[in-house]
Length: 115
Ligand code: 5GP
Image (cartoon, rainbow, N blue to C red; front, side, top):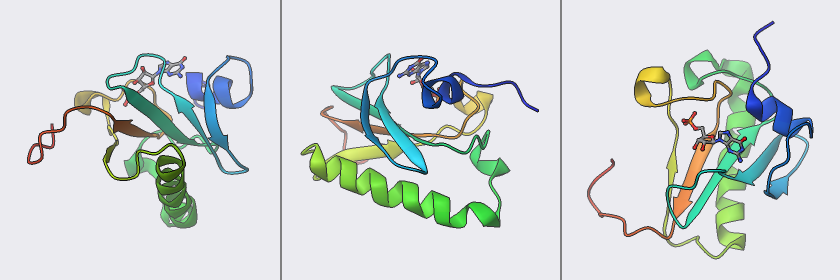
């Protein structure tokens, strides 16, 4: 079994977090070290380490996360301007090996730059 990540500890309630949404498949929390005025993390309960480790059986789950990201963004009033980012692998900046999407908003986005 891979070691429990900090996100599994948060999901299990062993570490506190500021939750904005949760259901039977995912939780959405505020990032502890925000990089923008709004910085959320959408995390599946299932501990898939990286996107490349996802399999076809995760198709519905990944779709669910996307739909919930849209709903959460709409509910928080950032539906017109937010970015969704996923870091896959240490060399791309991933530090927690439990797949998650960053949702960032409120920053002065450069329209044409991804990073
Ligand atoms: P990654 O670098 O893996 O793409 O993103 C991991 C994110 O998790 C980082 O933005 C980091 O600030 C956040 N993070 C790490 N530990 C905690 C924690 O204990 N609580 C919360 N809410 N966020 C965390």
